[in-house]
Image 1 (cartoon, rainbow, N blue to C red):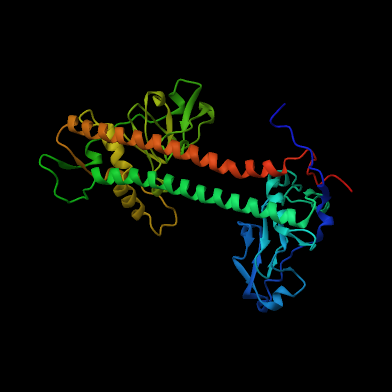
Image 2: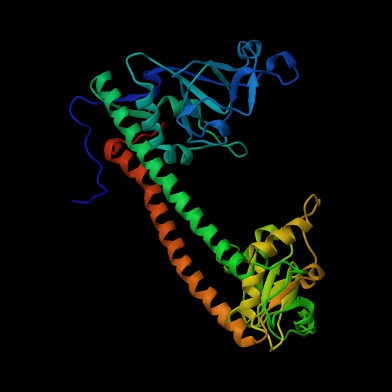
Length: 415
């Protein structure tokens, strides 16, 4: 028997359409030109505000006049909120008196049914709701679709309350697990910065250990780097790296697009070599930096990168680690604070001074020690991501365990 086969509806349960479970209505927006409607104490909920099961916070607030203007839907505590436009699939419940925009459909649930049970079921089919959207510009669910959503109903209200309470407890526990996993992942990320800060603890002008020197990047790099010229490139295609091609978490090239030379973008600039370091000069706070391996030999990068090609007396990985350190990131970020276009120049990068051990051998030893520590951190990061992925899959599994019946929950089914 396939493990994906849906179960039959339990004895005593029945399928009911959403329109049979209460009064369905649609929200709306009071005129923003009427000042007496706004800046009151009643939350005005749009699809963007439905981020939790119990909804009470909004970005805009209505007055009593705005709430009762007839231009929105007044909701009371316990009303079911179904986002039916723009962010379809989000489900919530009003946790207090509030108004809703046209993004939100409201079900005032009949007393014979539990709104929390209905909300949790609708959350379990949120993906189906999202896939059922119609419309060319603003996508949404039709009223007919929403009215005819099939919902499995247990025999008694007491059964609904029990199931809803159990599921809420389990989902709360999963959320706690998710929070712990996120904190673990963040802690691992912070450790990388702490390790780099420990090694590169000097600020320009600080006294260095004996034999060390401050060296400006421009003094230790090759001056003549081959520039890409489509006219004499000699090949039909090339691999192009733009800013989106650098993974700023793993500090590696994540994507190089193959492009015809005759269609080369004007920003295609520098022919790269193994051990080049490329640094995005756009939004430097994101620290899109990569050290190129042999597989990137001959690739061409965008003019949005500063290319660092070191002379033979210097160790590329030592410089690479420095250029990913918190000190460097903070320094270049401060350069663009308040700027309309957050970018630095190649000269800004090359003007930085780096604390250097006296020999390339010592640079290599420091770099190797960092590589070992970073490798261990990367293993821990991947393990944490795997754990987080598993935890984030739990809510769906829990909900399927309760609601995965043979009947299709399709709004296209007519009564």
